[in-house]
Structure formats: C-alpha cells, structure tokens
Image (cartoon, rainbow, N blue to C red; front, side):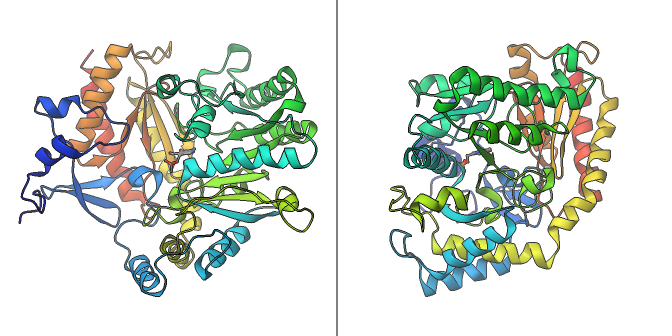
Length: 463
Ligand SMILES: Cc1ncc(COP(=O)(O)O)c(C=O)c1O
C-alpha cells in the first residue's frame, strides 16, 4: 500500500471526492481537477504531505500545536492513560487526570479564577460560558440579564450560541435565526481607526472600550449578562488591544455588573507569552474560555475557567446545579495529553521563549512593510497578521473579485507551494495569519519572511 491510497485501495483524492466533507471549505474545485492537500506526518515545526513534501507549519495546525509535532512524551502519556482508564465522563464522577488538569489550570489563571469546567473544544467553552452567565444571573436575582456583547468581525465558534456571539455575517446568515440578544460593538482595528483617534492609540482604546458601555446603557444593564472579547482578536485581522483598553472594559463591566469573558481559544497557552493572555495584558476577567493549545492539539479538549463568585450558587453558597455537560468534556486521555503538554512548556520554558523572542518575530515580519502590498503588520507574541492593501496611502483594500483571485487563489496556494503552511483570510480585511509552534526561532522567522516576500512580490504584479 502506498501512502496516498486508502485501505480499500482507493486513491486519496478519489476517496475525498466520494466521502469526505472538509470543514469551512468549498468543495467545487475538487470536482474540476483540483486536489485537497493531504498531510500525513508532522515533526517539530514541520508537516509533510502525502507526496513527501515538507512545509513549515506557520499556523501551528490551526493556532494549536504549541509544542510542535511528534512529541513522544505526550504520546506516551496518552498511551499510558488509555491503558489505565480510556474513558470516564465528568457527570457526577471524576477521574485523576481531570482533577490534575483543573488544579493546574487554576494555578495558571489570574485572580480567583479557580473553578474549571472542562469541555471538548473552543466553541463548547464559549457555549458553556454563555450558559453559565445566564444561569448565574438567574440565581442571584437578576434574571433579565441574558444579552451578550461581542465585537465586529470576531469569531467565537460555530454552535448556535457561540455563532450568535460570532460577528461574521458570512458565517451567520445561512443559519439564522440565531440565539437572540447578541449585540455588536466596534473592534480594536487601530489601522483603520476613525479619524479623531487615528493617531492616538490610547484615545482609540478608550473610544472602543466606551462603545461597550454605550451598548450596555442602550440595551439596559439589567438585560446584559456578558461581554466576550479575545485578548488579541484573530478574525478580521489580528487586532491587539490598545493600551488601556482592557482596564477601561473592566471598569465598565464592574460598573454595570456585566461579566467579562476572555475568549482565549487562540491566545492562551503561550501564544502571546503567558499561559493566559489576560496575564500578559494585565486584566482579570470573570471567565476564561480556552481550547486548542491546551493539549497542543494532541487530543480535543477545552476549558471554561470561572471565578469563585460564579461558582458560589453551585457550591458552598447555594443549592443549585449547573445542568450542562459534554460526554467527551475532560476526556481522560485528552487530560493526560494536557498534563504532558504543560510539562513540556515548563521543562523547555516555552513561555519565556515567546516573551524573549516576540520582539525579534515582530522585527522580522515588519521588514515586509517595504512591499507596496503590505499595509500593516500587527500582533503580539507569536501571533501576527499581515494586512494586504491595494494602495498603502489610502489603505484601499481589494475588491471581492481581487480578493478571490489574488488572496485566495494565488497567495494561499503559492505560499503552500513554496513550503509555508499558513492562512490568507479575508473575513475582514485581507490578512496573512501567522501563528507558528512556540518552538520556532530566528531561522524560522526569516524563512517565513522570505517565502511571504517572494509570494507577495508576485501577487503585486497581478492587478
Ligand atoms: C476565539 C475563538 N473562540 C472559539 C473558537 C471555536 O473553537 P473550536 O473550533 O475548538 O470550537 C475559535 C476557533 O478558532 C476561536 O478562535
């Protein structure tokens, strides 16, 4: 059997056409001679396709493989756990791996975020946080508080609740009606900040944060339960928080008794540097939602981490039960993977590595600003977006047709062809997203910069 034939003897591409439904992916091209990339192996910060070609994993799979591919210590922990206890739910029972992971996450989390609800992914964590927010306020005598505020172009997952919090019209329209009560405020896109704030990041941050207060007042504080924000917003183009932004948001949330949910599905576990990005930016949320890097992708797992106050009605101070759960939430093998993953972080000081190398990553990527097509380079830690524009002076973006032809059909494909797996995203303004494994260093920063430079030089000739 060769590598690109199924056990039944069907060539992969034929089997894909017959039976595979990829996620968030148009399939039409596959029926017109196109091929779906098939990745068969990963090693360190590289992945390999079924034809043996090697790629630098510039996206850590999907913002996930923090410690890199092929870690024997994680595989061994999962193997041992499978033999010890392959499955046990957290429904009225628990198991040592869930206990250990919960204790460890609470030790990484700030303030009194001590209560860990394990899930099976990011969307589930967001969904769990929404339900907890609504449930909590019902139990403390504020039953009208159910609305959720989130930011323009943000992505918070695909279950119906999480999709309501997601603010990308293209992902929402087909599934309407969604969960009611989801309200949107501006994001922190400083590159395209409105004129009075365009040259003052702090004033822009204040303005953007105050839009949250305004939305709460407009909707009525007695109807708003929570604000969901990513530390660095991925979707729409990797927007870091302006200085002072989260301080002001925290103040607003406290004033109106609205929960601040830090959706760290991407930003946690070293992506920005610390185990939780709210620590990097110096704010204490009421809930952290996370997933992805918690196991570096070796197994599906997520975590919603709540403050002591939010657990109170379900714990020593009350009589209530949180009627919410997932069969696979806190799966023992996934928890074993998480523990081994955190061991790697600590043994190899990966958080320090990101903190120490973030400036070099930024400096290297910023060299791309000399290209006429690069409008902005922004991000934090090992998480960057490179925004492409048609005209640097006016910041004019691409038309839909140009975006399709240049960004999706050329830039993405060409970077891959040239050995860099990463993503060109046009759900907001067009950006190339970079989020490599946390093990990379200067030589990989240079490799990414060089490949992107070559592809963007070619793309510029395509107008
Ligand atoms: C901020 C954020 N929240 C939630 C999700 C959903 O996570 P999952 O795909 O694990 O459900 C994602 C996925 O990328 C995300 O980036």
